[in-house]
Image 1 (cartoon, rainbow, N blue to C red):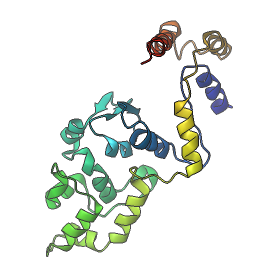
Image 2: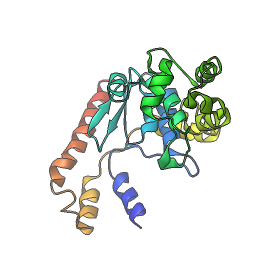
Image 3: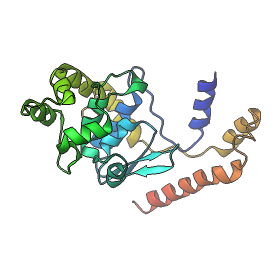
Image 4: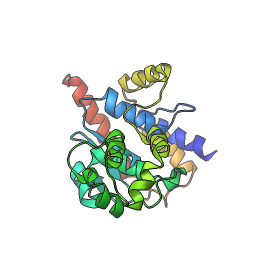
Length: 229
């Protein structure tokens, strides 16, 4: 019931909603960001670190919990790894939130210490990683563990990569049509009526000023359309 009610709220706001059964939201977001809106500046709002691999000169991630806008430089400042190599790091360390096991002992400090190219500015992908460890005659336990778990690395890559997502052509067409449609206008009276019915004053105490931002968005969009922008 709550999910259904949430959708009712969202449908009254000037937002484009995309929901596809059996398709991960991060795959849809990645597809739109990397393959559809290729000339657009994009902000992804999420706490999911998987999106950090997408960051470049036009794609950014806003963390609503940390209140941080992640850029390529911000990722390096926090992790010591640039965004183009963040996927390789995630492949090694895994993701507990998604029950994806990583390489034992592959913490951030150890990875940067023993796999030095991952912290460089050049692209260092999974193939580079495998070549790197295979060309090292090292007794370092982490290096040997990586050599012994190449299958795990490849599995993690398939589960985590967002550069070439697994979405059917039928769903791709649906997504393309959804983002090409005109964004619906705000239905203020319906939103306000629903808000009053649910007695949400304590959750959005400044509802009038909050919803004004959506009115401004409507006006800005209308001006852009009238100016053929």
